[in-house]
Length: 199
Image (tube, rainbow, N blue to C red; front, side, top):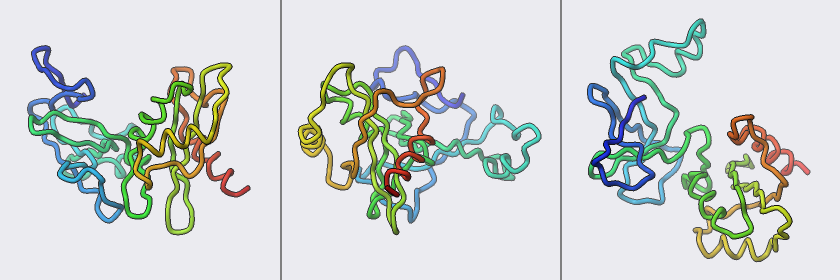
């Protein structure tokens, strides 16, 4: 645990609160990977250091080296931003970031828009590697018994997303693959997206 919310705080529900006292934190720029469309927002990969941070993974030295620096900084793997009140927002996971034509695309932003469509139950967005670039692929689970007009769905998305964020491909599924606890298996969907590209 690295953050907390106080009952008296009045902030958007999407914040995870303020970073805990005694913890140091920093946002590492995403660097040459791409640029954010949200000018003025400080968005980066979240690193933390403090007394409650783990010393390493048990009997996994390679995983420890990949996650922790020698001076105790932990790479959380989260892409985050801070507002003017030091409220922390998790934007996505760094391994899920899509870089398309030099722009950083955060899958939750695209998923939230597609999920607004009345025929859609759930969406998972992943990146697909193509020559020198990445494409956006959306896997969409629809309401049972509802027939989706693909042209209408694409028009719905186009009205709400900038061109570079729009999915190159939309794949309709009866159910998105998930764990027993309901977590969507995005790794499996990335594999499916690459297979679709090869067809």
